[in-house]
Image 1 (cartoon, rainbow, N blue to C red):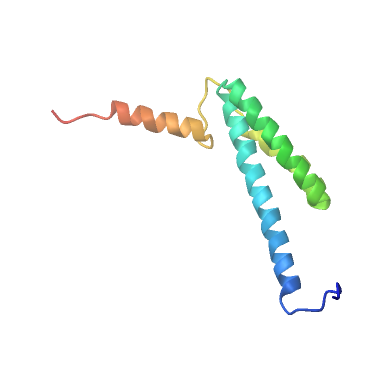
Image 2 (tube, helix red, strand yellow):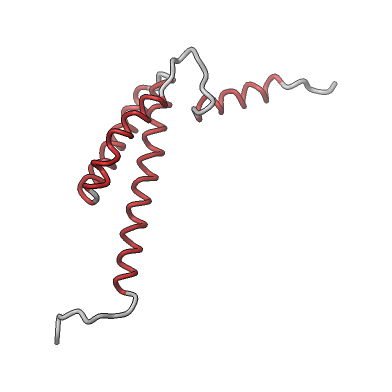
Length: 115
């Protein structure tokens, strides 16, 4: 039984596609988790924000391990994006998912009702 891999059309393409999808999924997950962590910190939900931040660090570590060049290129941008995503608890931000949900709930509760 031979263990030599023979050139099979599409095998390398499939591996490359899987790797690209893995990278895209990790980057999407990082973006979403980092945004949620910033939103939760902005609203003083520290316990949940801590859990999200720890998850963010785990995702970042996986990216650093599997895609070190990409990690080096993005880590500074991530820090800036995360800092911009936070806002003062007394203010509202149109880019904050929690603020949008709160505003939507408030609007639904105060909508004039027909008699």
